[in-house]
Length: 181
Image 1 (cartoon, rainbow, N blue to C red):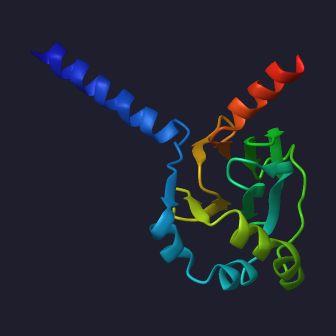
Image 2 (image 1 turned 180 degrees about the vertical axis):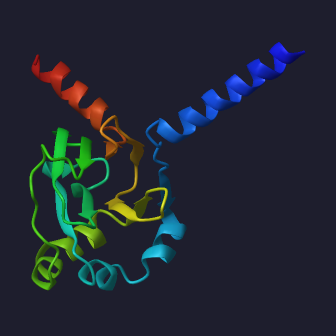
């Protein structure tokens, strides 16, 4: 009887030790659509009221299927770096706050007026808000219709987002077949 209690105690101790000493897992909450829009409220006031940097994932040519010039607008709430493991028309992977990344421009009244508002109103109207386990913003991303968004906390504990515009891969494959590339 004593050996069972001893084993249970040892298992309990090991579980407690793992909970205390194991690196904590980061939860990722993603708000989309109406829920994200309610969270953000007036997006211009939200962005310009903080210390955001931004990037517009522009296309080298207009997307024939959806008629847009950009695939997404990304906002980084802390002004940290952006890393782009993949950046092609219709297919993107980016990591927020990577030390290996590059700094982007701050969101200002001028950049809002000259670039951001146009990219949002013309091409990218669907908001995604990424929050950590403490409900702090990790990023805000606006995409257009037909964009698949997947996200995760990567091995470096940073937000990694993958975007794929519907038909983007098909269009590239069709171009390759037509042109023998």
